[in-house]
Length: 157
Image 1 (tube, rainbow, N blue to C red):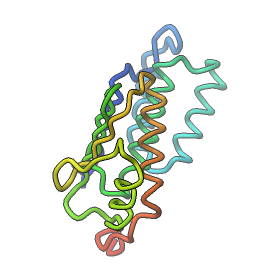
Image 2 (image 1 turned 135 degrees about the vertical axis):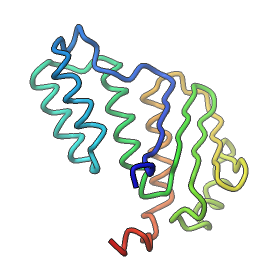
Image 3 (image 1 turned 45 degrees about the vertical axis):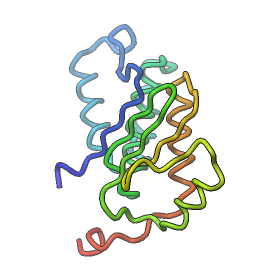
């Protein structure tokens, strides 16, 4: 179960800069809470706490939040990796992801910039220089699949 984490790379610094949050122990505590968050609400609560204490998020901290939000959002869809570079975003799924395959086909037919790359990968070709825009594109694509199909493994717990 520990290996079931989704690898998210937005190709941008994702951290709490020390000139924003100077206390190293506090930073580590925030990183740990973010890494163990299972729901978007937990990330939102942490975001609120961080902004309350230190003020408006710098870009690197916003990217950090986006990374963890994407991780939490993409897991139910069977996503194992998101590699979001400025020109190409690749979303890798585990075998037999809990997504209606017709929704994937419809999305590819409607969007010329989205292609299948092998059996388990979607390739999105779009120039998005900002990490936040790449994160938004991944969110939009995942939400375009509708609700993930109830996973038999999750139902057995």
